[in-house]
Image 1 (cartoon, rainbow, N blue to C red):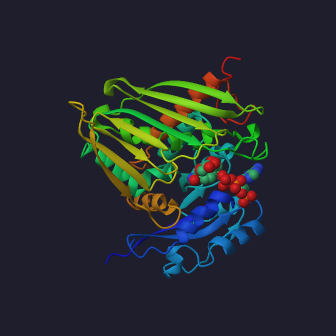
Image 2 (cartoon, helix red, strand yellow):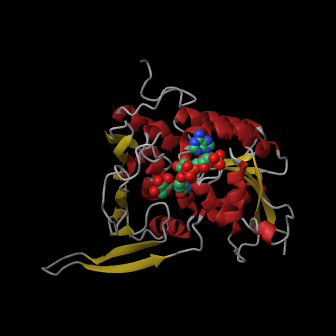
Image 3 (cartoon, helix red, strand yellow):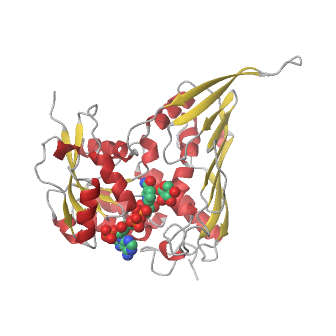
Length: 383
Ligand SMILES: NC(=O)C1=CN([C@@H]2O[C@H](COP(=O)(O)OP(=O)(O)OC[C@H]3O[C@@H](n4cnc5c(N)ncnc54)[C@H](OP(=O)(O)O)[C@@H]3O)[C@@H](O)[C@H]2O)C=CC1
Ligand SMILES: O=C1OC[C@@H](O)[C@H](O)[C@H]1O
């Protein structure tokens, strides 16, 4: 058996999602033999926090350290020390939205490949800048849209476009509702204006996943961009409270309505419904971690006073851990293979996401604090 490729990671920011990422890199998965992960550095503004992070999440290191391929244990370091470590090849960026552009720039300038949490940045101009920098330097760069690497999502794509289980797709409705407003403190990053809070930037990319899989990636769409309509309401702080994106694909005669809200107490069984000419698919799980969906196939339309006959297939494809290791494996394989973009989440997908977010913020009047966007200021152009 060929030796596995060892991905040497640095994790930037010892916060919540970085912990999840670290635990997933440490998750033993004997079935994965081509890539293994080592965490060499955890960058934190406070190395005591970094030490605790390692003790809590990486006591034995990543899978490559556990298997003895890498002897060096994870070390708590400053951000600068992490970037300066020549043995770290890939940096995972788990800092706050408004720090992503600076942190990705620093990592790329230090010669590191980068996986950056969603939202990749604050606006399309920032992303175009990073994409160009990564390409100039020949380094890998990807937004951490982990949903795209989940087995059920890949299976959904196959069923929709290869087996065409629901015929031609006409409509997608997705919603991402969390009751955060008036529940979390106003200065929590998820709602606060000072941290570019609100559902659009926080979960907009997830909410568009069903539309991406069913319409944007539909081979019949041939990569055409949607015509976008937006609606937004605001919190008292000025961040968005609820945002709806309508993505129209005229050549498919299909559209997606993606609604996200921080003000909805609404337990869901159907987080998304994809409607086709021969049936519909219902996605049951939160749109960040999708493991279950149901295909309802119309076998016999209603006729002669008899009701329609439907058949139902339940698809369950769960996996261990949270699932961030699935995107980490994909990054490791791409870096091993010398690629600078991932096929499933290429730079163009993130650019389209950011352009849609920009449009929604312009039309909704969500202008971020002055100086937060490192390039441009969406909604304040010409003012
Ligand atoms: N993929 C997913 O499922 C998820 C992704 N995310 C994304 O990850 C990012 C981080 O979110 P989350 O982990 O919840 O946030 P946390 O607040 O838990 O962590 C953010 C980290 O950023 C670092 N940081 C650097 N400068 C500052 C600063 N001035 N103020 C506060 N923190 C700072 C801190 O690390 P340190 O002090 O160690 O330097 C901090 O721990 C967000 O962009 C979010 O959208 C979040 C949740 C889930
Ligand atoms: O990435 C995320 O996934 C789950 C959400 O509830 C959270 O706010 C977000 O950051």
